[in-house]
Image (tube, rainbow, N blue to C red; front, side):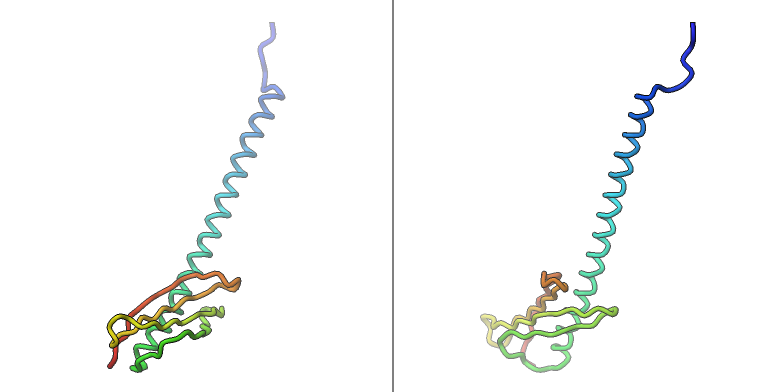
Length: 119
C-alpha cells in the first residue's frame, strides 16, 4: 500500500485560484485607497483656495455687491477655477458669500460660505 506523497493537481489549482482572487481583491482595495487619497488632497487644496478668496474679501473691507463672479486659484502647481456668489440676506447690513471650487472636469469639489457685514 502506497501513502500519498503530495498534493493532487486539483488541490494545487484550488490553492492558486484562492491566491489569485485574494491578490486581485488586494489590488482593487489598494487602487481605491489611492483614489481616495488623491481626492482628499484635491478637496484640501480646493478648501484652501475658497478660504483664500473669502479671507481676501474680509481683508478688503468692502461691502460686496450682489452677483456672481469667477476666479482662478494657483495652489501647489495646480490651477483651480472657482465661482463666487454674493446674495442678500434678510438683514440689509449683511451679505452671504459662497465660494465654490471646481476640478478640471467642472465637477464641484468644495463650497464654503460666510456672511460679510458692512464696516
